[in-house]
Length: 103
Image 1 (tube, rainbow, N blue to C red):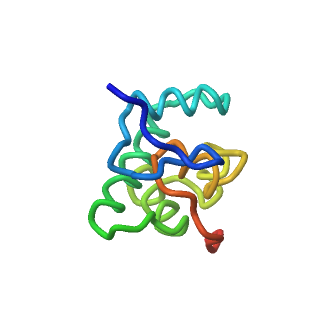
Image 2: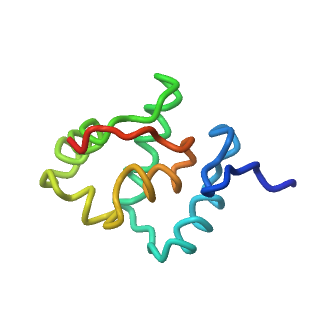
C-alpha cells in the first residue's frame, strides 16, 4: 500500500487516507503516547470531519470531552501540550488547519 501524500509540514493532503496506523506513527514521531482519551478525541474529530467536511473547532472538542468524560476545559491542552491545531489535527489526519479560536 503506498504511503499517503503529505504536505511540507506533514499533514495529510487527503484526510480520507487516514488510518489508525497513520495516527500511531505520527503520534510516535511527535512523542505522544496515545491513550484511550486521545483515541476518543481523534475519533470525535474524524466523525465531525466526515459529517461537516471540516475539522472541528477546538471548542467542539472541549465540549465533547466535558460531556463524555467530565473533563475540564484545559484537558485538550494536557492531551496535546504542543497545541490542538498542530499535533491533534495532524494525528487525526486533518489538512493543515487555518488559525482557529482556542475555545
